[in-house]
Image 1 (cartoon, rainbow, N blue to C red):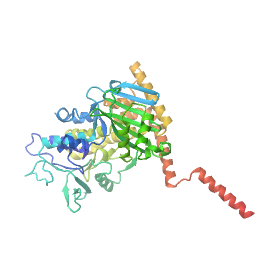
Image 2: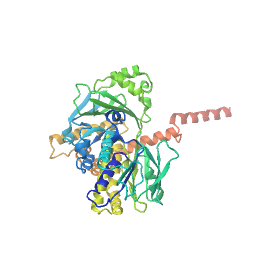
Image 3: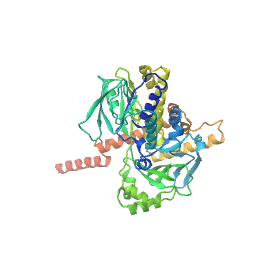
Length: 484
């Protein structure tokens, strides 16, 4: 389920209010636990990663009266300042307002805290017949199956095969009229769409990066609500650092795949003391308890992130719909993944109203409206951040100049297109503007070329020039020897 599935459930169930009989019966299947039932300590133990919640996501949440005010507000840290580090000697600080972020329109929050708030709303506002079959004449309009995997979508019979996690023999089918796939990057529902629609195209690939994250106490000289984007935060590694609850900072450090040879070998060891000293020497943005950070570093593996592109999000014959990461999993670099997923749920709700609950018409228009937004999301996230260090520096300098010009002469110079996203600009509009600046095309050429060359080299499709010339020289020498 995740945030998109939970919010979609809430919005669908709201349509039953003041109805003599329910319009919608919702069955929610989630392989994870019900975070809404965890107490404070239990939820802290389930912390995941910090993400931004801004206009697109907040507008969808605020469609439900009281959901933001009573369940969401206060879960995260309001974004108030930004620090962009072009190099250890050049850092530029902005206020959130210079990015167009108004009060209560942008904050960072743990992804699982949002899931907990949405799940708690569902449990408190709707009778939840957990783990039972829905019978409209007997049970409520909502049933949840947490700790349960969706294994297979039988599109011919319109049913989903599910199994409780850890119970390999207990499987059952759930019938559906519409199956909404909000089941993540490895979506089972998307697999069904692939098997029934020859016009459906999708791809899954990585974002060509490896990263680790650490939680450190916010230093006293760092303003509350500050996030950082730091080029070469330590040599050859980029950092996204986000404020989090508990007066802490979530420090993410990553490097591009294939660039391991430029990363100090100490960072691939379990040497806590050595890593701590390395961070203390090289991390230029602020001071921290690097010994504790180094312990966190060695106690985790390297993380990778995938992205998904789809050309269609629905199938009317088999009544399938994709939303969230199943449709457009993305790099977190522009902070709009969860926001776009929540917006998916909000748009579907609006389209059901527009088409008077004609589900077929609604899912058809959903693809028309959201495919461009989902693909804009993934491409803006990956093709506005270059895998080439020199090109990325040029991009950051250009953004800095555009921000300064907009601040000085706003009537003559528009806001940087990427900054406009936080104000609610459609991602497809931002994509169009970034394309007209030529940035998308340039970075796409660079990133795709780097990724392709890496694949060709590591798969053995192309022999390195040095090795290839060595083979030629060896062959020539053998020929000369034979002649002699």
